[in-house]
Image (tube, rainbow, N blue to C red; front, side, top):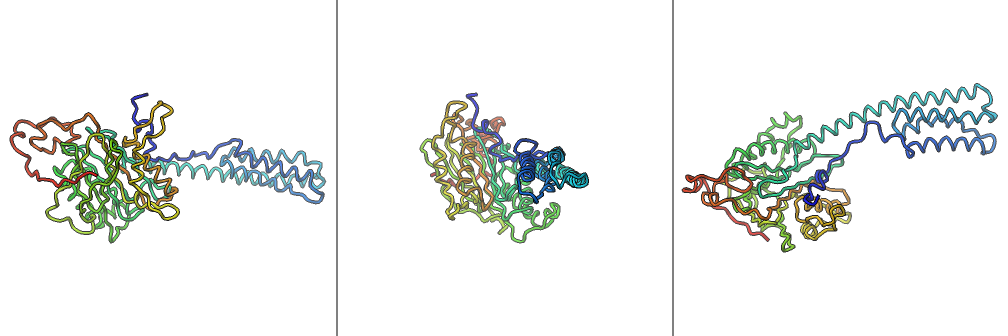
Length: 446
């Protein structure tokens, strides 16, 4: 349909889900049945046309084992054994196998291998079924922990993607989430030091804290302090013991918090995380936002009191912010060259080939398209061998959605920020500014 967005066409491609193998193995087909069939034919040809005095008829007993290795099905083992037994019939004219005892011994060897292969194929099927179940549980855990963001929140369109440096691993040390709240749309992206179960346990603890604090805290500084306290409790040992892992002595987390404002820009608090990139499709320009000095990562030093004023990241309608972890810029090719994220984003803004299904090119600035193209460029550059996990989070402010109504701008109330569906402020709110509203430092876009 003409109205579908790039994310609707691609769907699960952004999530990088892995389809689990079927419990029965690769199945019975010509490719998997060819090796045992060729083995039988080769043994028959050798016995018929090889010089006298060489007998390899015992090799027919290996046919069921070859079928078991090729198909993984019990039916394949039985079919392979039947073919081997049937192949003994034309060898009746071979002198060494004209007597009944020799042929009976060969038949017994084939049947023994059939029984052993049948049992091995059954065990393999059970283990494969258990593996499928484990992967299904892992996929559900990933969707619950590192869940995809909402496709639309107020005037913003969102998309995210994740690449793990560990093969077959669905989770790593990166985290991201988007929560529409009464105080506006709030985003988080972070990177936990290390890999493995300790990092995943820390990700779970921080995301759980953020999802509660985003709804409870009226200002972004309160959310950041809640994250600090949650990380302290987790690293103190209690949270790690509950997760069944040992706490790391020097674990820390880089965190970038964003909150949508009434004018469509974002307030930002940064604790040691890379600043996002600003994509301006109208000017075909992409670059990092002007960098302000970030706070230290959480877990290294206590947060200062008071916290500095949030930076402001302007986002005109139609522009995109790309949040990322440092794994995107640390990716290396075979020669050790670093990945040029800014250059890749400039290529993203270039129009792509026309979509054969709809006869038009996809929108290169759509968040789903941005995430997909950057992921593809990362994999091409690194050859699929990443040294660190990579998380990407794209946010676009849609055109045709101006700032909220005048009451929100008059009172400056946090609940009137973009992405909030609550009614506008009442007359009493218009007569006075919000309590605790502090001026904010503005960070210029590129």
